[in-house]
Length: 83
Length: 151
Image 1 (cartoon, rainbow over the protein chains, first blue to last red):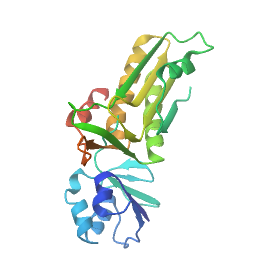
Image 2: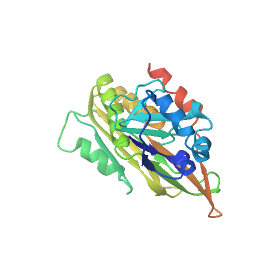
Image 3: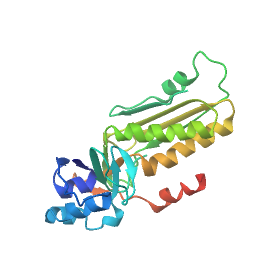
């Protein structure tokens, strides 16, 4: 699955995107986030406050309990500050 | 009508955008626009760097515009959001709403701006006047709270 990061999450992880094969036990967005945290300290740093991280599946906002389903792209980013 | 949505690095021209919504027609009774500018934060800020999620930015703004079109009878709706490096005094965002009557145009423009602030995937990073890359702008609780009144 393609995983993309934005803003300070991108800076902390150290890359804008990557391909990750999530294990079968990863069913929801929250599961995916927990899995990422286990990948290394840069991920643990990026997701140290998981409650403020927002996510999108195939470019649509989703809640942490959303199932990954057949989505091809998952994005993680901080609260938005446009406008 | 279909909303005109543009995500671009370049600046935009308000009068040209109003003309695009009104030229050659006589059914528009009012146009309301909002332009957001880059502040210098009392002289401390040298530039803003705007990052966005290509693809999702357009799609999310389109979803917000569709919702606005369902709520109000609009004759035209334009949203332009810039990304990249933006200097103090420069324009960042534009919303233009055209309708038969003023209230729909006022309300739709405000609705789109309120949702754009908290839902469109853009992030601002501040660069300070000393040339240092500053910090990411924090989201404001009041921006999120502003959405509640549209329920």
